[in-house]
Image 1 (spheres, rainbow, N blue to C red):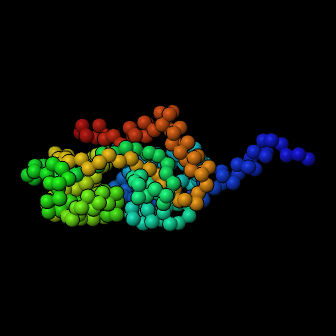
Image 2 (image 1 turned 180 degrees about the vertical axis):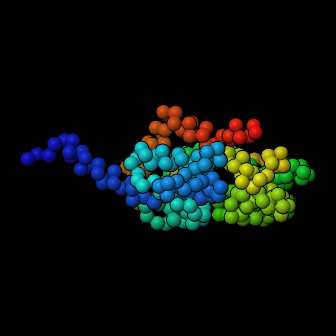
Image 3 (image 1 turned 120 degrees about the horizontal axis):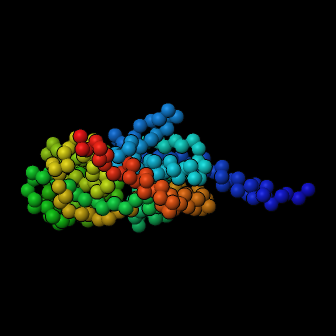
Length: 259
C-alpha cells in the first residue's frame, strides 16, 4: 500500500521536530532577574531588564518550535560560550556576534541591539570622555571573558578588571575600587536596581560601541533546525509579541517607580 502524502511528510519532518528537544539551553549573568516557577522552569522577572527579556523571548521561541520541556540552565559566560563552541546540541544566549566567533557557533538573531557604555560615579571628575582618556584611569571593570573585555584588550587597555557579573563591577564602582564600569544601556536600570545604586549616582563617561545580542547554537545542529529558531524569532517580531515581551520585561515598572 502506498504511503499517503500527509503521512510521508510527517515521517520526513519527524527527525527535525524531535531534534529540537535534544538541545540544552544555557544563559548567563541573570542574578536577581529570574525565579523558578511551579514547573521548576527558569522564568524572567517582569521589569527587571534585558536578561529577563531574553529568557522570556527564548521561551516564546521554544513554544513555536515545540521545544519541551522549557528548561534553561544558568552558568557563567565563559562556561556557556565554551560549551556551545565545543559541545554538541548546546544553545547559549545572550552573546555578541563578533568576527572572532564566526564559525564557532551558528547564529539566531539579533535578539536585541544595545549600546555599550562605560559609566562612572557622578561625583567623580568628569575628565574621561573617550577610549584614550579611559586608558589612563586607575581601572575599568568589565564582565569576565565577555565581548567588552576582549574589545578593551584589543584596544590595548592595560587597566582592565574582570568582574564575575555586571553587578559585581558596579558594586566595585560604588565602593571606589574601580573608576569605570561597563554595561549595555539596556541593562543599566536592572544593574542599578540589584546593586541598590540610585540612577543619579552614575553617569555615562563614553560609548564603546554598538552591539547586537544573539542566540548561539552548536555547529552540529542541522541547518534546518537553526532556520526554525530564526523563523520563530522573526514571527514574534512580525506579530507584535516581541514588543509586548519587551514592554513587560525591558521597561521599568512605572507604577512601582511612582511610589
